[in-house]
Image 1 (cartoon, each protein chain N blue to C red):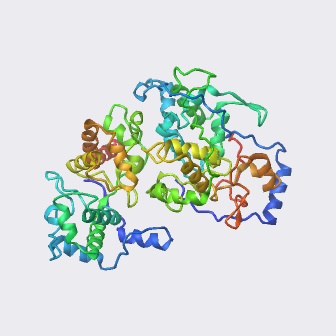
Image 2 (cartoon, chains in turn brown, cyan):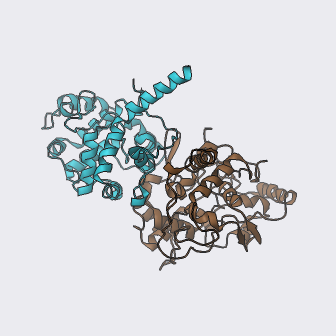
Image 3 (tube, rainbow over the protein chains, first blue to last red):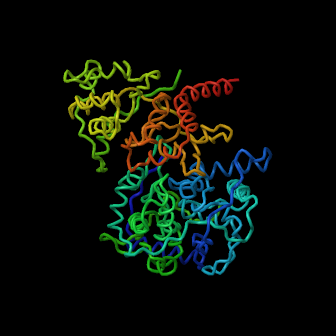
Length: 323
Length: 237
């Protein structure tokens, strides 16, 4: 694994804005698609679906691919430097290696793709959805369709969805929709929730904790975290995940208000740039096109404008699939 | 032979944490803590606390038969917190509580720094898939999510070697001690974990799981070392 050098946050000065405007002219005019936009809410009710057990993965080439996909899912850091440029693993946000209901389980999402998305007026495939995770949640580069990592992950998901209905929304998919909080969510209140409930694992600085070179508790902001385009940077998505899944072993222990507030606190911190910013003229245009969801990107906060920088992480290349 | 290496002493870790401005509310460590702690560990403090080594062993390795825990290489902040909690009563032990009450603040800081400075385990951190047929390993690496039990290693780190000051190493700890602690959390007699994180998990563990996981971590360093030697032999052939 390559050593991770923290990058300085560069404020978007005139020079970098000019560079980005030029880049926007020379690259495709069409903005990148919004792969991380959540599907409509899952139907209510108890999740009853049971994915197959790992001891029953068949002992053949299909099974080998399932196991490889499982290993990538849990230890996504094995793709560090190739497709992953932050400190995250898929299983951070999809608990129990993508098996846990209300933790965006893979058995429930698998059958929902291909899915039409009005936002980009396209039918998106599961491969594209996974690629979106690499671009945003992993702040990386998407493996090409048909490449081994992507085939392995698709096979793992396919196996996990054994017996699940196709093209039918299942209870337990995604994170359970959280009702709007009584009081408007507030990062300052969230800071207290964070200090009391989250900092013991994720650190007061949000950088998580490592043992040797292995990330144990994931970073929530800063260079090692998901970028400004990831689904998790939405306050609503993070609040829903936190409520249903955090702290570990204590699901639904925070109040709705606490979950919203702490999600706002976490997501009002700086993180790597939204890769779609490369194709947009300005921060304002990026906000206008992609960030109309109550998040903090492009908003003034504590004396600075969040997301006003050119830190795309370790990989400076555009986020297009490898050939 | 088990692969061993010096764990960064708690003293150093704390200084670094302060240097980077991280919030850390533990005691301020002094330069002579380690030698002072060693003296107390070997001779007691002359104020009612007997030599720690009488129960925890000359090298701080504890005692499996009596369930006295290994202290060598545990984080200083963790050890110091346990001593304070024994004194305040949020952690209970008829053996330890009187000694903790006989230790001054300085004494607690010193013995914690001393034990943290001793050689700890340095186990592999690389990802290794869990064997679905091995119930204990599955619990350690994958958990029992059907019963809302996260994997032990999700908080205690790869191979249960501990994470930071709040999540102590489990690997190489005596099974008798681990089992007693899990039972204590489950029945409420130990309640000094941050945010009840351990309590919420322990309450869901079955007797069988407690037995399996305690044995797993107690024997893990030895099994990893055997596996590593076997790998090397295989590689050489």
